[in-house]
Image: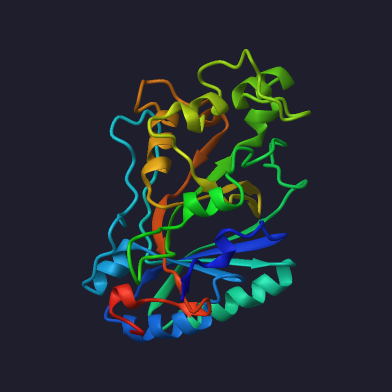
Length: 296
């Protein structure tokens, strides 16, 4: 029996830590992945593999590619391809700090840490700007239908693709806006989360309205606020059966589609960007890497 990593569909944890890694030259990648497959449970730790790692193995995963900005984007959208991504989910920061140390040490022979982002749930699921995040997320069976690969056969069935970007907020710019300007930049009232009838075309809600794309561009968002020293923002995480829906939304947000940029870019900006493939679980217990010729 194969199933998806359950943390993908589970509610957000109170705290999280996002780790990304690059490959070490001449490392024994296969041995490291076999070890990873046995330790990742898919619930407390969700794992994603990037194209650099798949290429090192001499393999291919249908649908996996490295993140690239849309052609014609009017804003900077950094691409930072990484080999491995771990989403550590937990109840409190100390637990996650110790688990992050474990993974860094465990993987040190094959991977170098590229980023370590501590994240948390804020005000019941709001961004640090105070607005609810993920309002249009699919629920229940629709969430699984959106995020989980189906009908692709063993090794791929139950997997998922994830787009990851760290957005850094400039809260001073946001705070300089009037409450009405803030609401119109988002397209919703912060007070009750109701969509504004008079929201401008640049409002985030208008730019990303899932039903306005053909086909509908639906993703399962699992984003969380982050803070590190004096910097803060949103760790954007979007799961899907492919990257198509995310790319359609980003093309419109960045002005690549029609030259009009999302108002979000007035006070926040992505500082990295990467794609990963999240393998399914074998017997719902260990990562199934049979698509890569491992643990078959």
